[in-house]
Structure formats: structure tokens, C-alpha cells
Length: 329
Image (tube, rainbow, N blue to C red; front, side, top):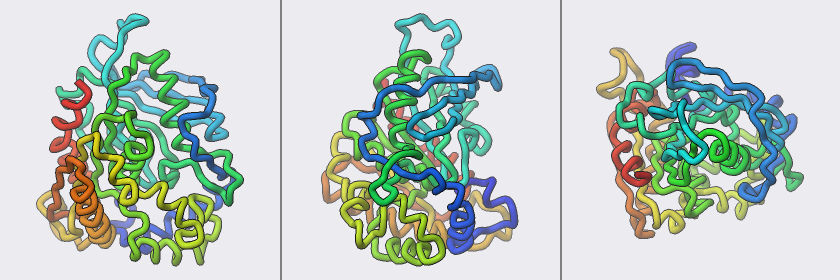
């Protein structure tokens, strides 16, 4: 969840967050249907608009067959990028947003534009839907759009490599829902990313309490089973998207995993209240951390006092950036 969600009405508990998610489901699911072959789709997406927002910030609008609609991508470009030649390539850092966020989230809620360490890297910040969950939706086996995994890892990647100077050395990081997406992408596509970082992500899908909460949500919005199906009836599909179940596939890459405990911390405003979302995410992150260590993954963890809010994600980006960039240089 991003600051734009939290700033309207103050603190949001998990029930309120689920309510916001459920309220958006009719629009989200109207065209839902996903496939899992994210790297097999033909490269038919193309850019229909390009806007320079600031000297190093460029917004692209792509028409995507995988999504069945257009989608936005924000680029933070490296030095000399405007004068690039056909053979020029830069390392790539994908930054993924959370539930309710957009391609603008990282530039609005962090100091990413001012980081000197990113002046030699192409930073890619793609739209992922209100609650697209960085996946190709199952849709009861019907598949079809919206297929976010295919859009990000096949369509967008190929466009960036052909026309915007993206190289083959990639790292990925994300906040909240995007933290889950970063780990899922790295685990489901070995060799695509050289390092991964997750900040406050829901990173253990089949944790019993996580399953219980999703099944409660299904009672109000059964359409949302279109994502991966029911976690009991379609458990195999959930396992194929669960970083906990895929932990062994992360052995080749360094992983940074961080989360607060939900108690107001040093970066929260005076009078801030406890945050149920972050408290629960802490349970999932500790569970995954143990699993990664047992699987022999090179994992660095940072568990701290704090809430589910952008100030902490900015700090955690700073903490993990040396690892991410050393992997792609």
C-alpha cells in the first residue's frame, strides 16, 4: 500500500485495506484472465506515447496485448541516455509499486531521483494495476488479460531492450505488493534478475493465516478467485506463485528482505497508531526468511520498529541499493 491510500483518512488496518481492494474488484476482474507462460508471449506491445516529465524522467504509454489495454511506465534515465547510440546499454533496476500505487509511486514517495548511485542505471517503474499482484491471472483456467507478468517480463522488457538502452543485467525491488512481485519474478524466472529486494511484502502466500484472510475476502468478492483460484482447491497454482514454496530457486541471487513490526517507529509522525498491515506482514517475512536460510539462499534481513509507510521503504531502498547495484555492474 502506498501513501496515496494512507493519506486519505489516516491509518488503514488490514480490514480497511481489504475493503478498498474489494471495492475495486468489479473493474479489475471485468477482463481478467491470465496465463502463466510469461516469457512465451509474442512481442507485440508497442509505445504509443512518450512524455518527458523532468530532465531524467520519461513516461511511456504502451499498448499491451497481454493486458488488453494501455499501461504506463516511468523511466528514470542514466546520464548520457539522451545521446545513446544503437549499441549503448545500461544495467536495469526495476522498482515495483504496492497495492493502489502507480508508475509514479517511487518518484512521488521517495528520493529516488536524487540518488547519485542511480545515475548509471536505467530505473524502470511500471504500472501494475490497483491490485494486479504481478501475475498472469488464472481466471478459472480461461486465462487472457490482464497478464501483468507477461507485460512486465516479456512485452515491456523487449521494448526497453530494443529502443531504450536496457541491458541484460537486471535487479528488481518492490514495496508491499511490489515486494511480493519482486521475489515472485526472480524465483519464477531464474536468470532474469541478478538480485532482489522486498520491503514489507506479503511474501508467504500459503501461510495459514494468509490463506484464512484471503478466503474471508472471497466471501465478499468471489470474483477475486480469478487471481490464482482458491488457495485450498487450487493449492498447486498458489504454490507456483508463492516465494516460500519457490525459495530454493532463489539460491543463485542475493536477497534483501525487510519489514517493520507495526509499532510506530522513528520515521512515523507523532501520534501514529499501531499498523495491523505491517504487523501481519512481519509474520510472513519472518516465515520466508527462515525458509530462505534453510534453502541456502544468500539473504540479508532487516526487521525494525515501524509501520507500513513510504518513509521506511525509502530507507530500505537505501540499505539494499549497494547489494542491488553491485549485482548488475
